[in-house]
Amino acid sequence: MEKRWEIKEQPNTEVVKDLRESLNISEVLAILLAQRGITNFAQAKSYFNPSLDELHDPFLMKGMCDAVSRIKNAIDDEENILIFGDYDVDGTTAVTLFYEFLTSIYSKVFFYIPDRNNEGYGISQQSIEFAVQNNISLVIALDCGIKAHEEIKYAQSKGIDYIICDHHLPDRSVPKAYAVLDPKQKGCRYPYKDLSGCGVGFKLVQAYTEKFNLPKENLLPLLDLVAVSIAADIVPITGENRVLAYAGLKRLNSDPRLAFQQLIPTNIKNNVNISNVVFSIAPKINAAGRIKHGSEAVRFMLSTDEEDCRKYLNDINSLNNERKTLDLDMTHDALFQLDQINTKEKYSTIVYDASWNKGVIGIVASRLVDLYYKPTIVCTKNNEGEIVGSARSIQEFDIHSAIEKNKDLLTQFGGHMAAAGLAMKEENFEEFKIRFDQTVKEMSNGKHFTPSILIDKEISFNDMTRSFLESVMRMAPFGPDNMNPVFISKDLLATDFRLVGKEHARLYVHQRDTRITFPAIGFKLGKFGPKLEKGQSFDMVYTIGMNYWQGKGTWQLNIKDIRFND
Image (tube, rainbow, N blue to C red; front, top):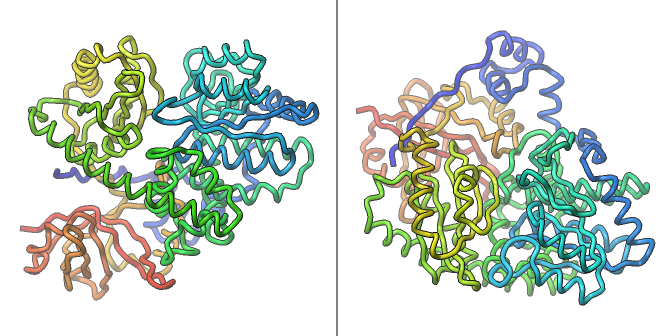
């Protein structure tokens, strides 16, 4: 699918001038900083050197005092405490983090991850029964619970208190739990709203540590978990998330927990970035919850025994391979379904098969978004006979809002702008398909979506000095709202083109009016090979990165798109 190229609006020239002079940097780098909201020396200093000292006071979060005092009372009274969390990476890292912290100061602690197929998302009836059977009187629910009104009410009738630590959008009211921690809830004056679920759990640990004068150094081993959750849950890499991701990556590259040591590919040890977490670490952690059970991932991340850790890793690798096979088969089936209809007339993509694995439908939805560039929902049937779906969106569309407009057809839904989950009675499915597509049409003003690449700046290869390249890399960690800068350079030629695998391109690129050459790689851009080999000039959109081989890094341009000059 052809992509639109859009160059960002250039920032105020006075701001750029001030940044150039105060930081003694190039105009291009000053523009990149200004585009990211950095307008003065102090902001730039914080941006390039994020510090844990910049973390906000955790007691600014609504409900924090109550949560901390309830945990302290539970410990003093020797109550049984249950750590509960979702089965995805954010949930399992959150449970690992809080269980590891709490068991370092107290022994009567359990953890519980719901079964994706038999219990589904969030606080389940089965988990409450587990708490009753094990005489648990306090449950700390992580990365879920913000919509569990009835479940919390039922648990309270059984004498169980809940502390909810969530980051999802709440309903108009929140459950009547003992304490609710969610920066997005009404009346919460916490300054940063975009923490991951694990991040909210970390703030509770931070608060408890500060309140009872525990060593702050005890927080450091938990930071690798927070960084993995931030990367996997695709939350903005701004503000406090940037500080936590920066510190967490530092931990991953210097002293990661045993599980992460085994997950990090050899060629990037000590050089792990957010992208590596997303593509190398997170999928394997996720595989346990998708195919078998999320508790396997928690045990793996908690493990301090090398032999045990290796066994968990072997199991997780097997589950991940099974996940890959299911992913390919289900994507093939979904594409076959879509071939039978006129997708061009549709504003959304919805597919359903009762036999599909519930743990993989989210991945398939993401693949269909890449192919069709439309808000997408992939559905299957759960054990209760309901149709459940995993929704993924495109950059400019709020899929949670579109689903909410049709909530009268649903039994359950939740999520955020980019991704959501839902459930409905089977008899409502056909009507939901029609109404959801109409909703997308109305919200997009009847226009079909076209993928676009937002470009920060046109530059010449002469601009790419070593100092400039190093400064761009210091803008990391990259992710939502702090993306790796995207550049365009024109009138380029390629040499030494070769195909990697079936569809990837590896080549060297130089600009006609310079003598500078860079190695480059283009994923799924092998189709351009014939024209590149003929020596046809082209314009190229790309990001700057490092390619590591045997511990050594070399500069590399990561191609996003090419247009030939006919």
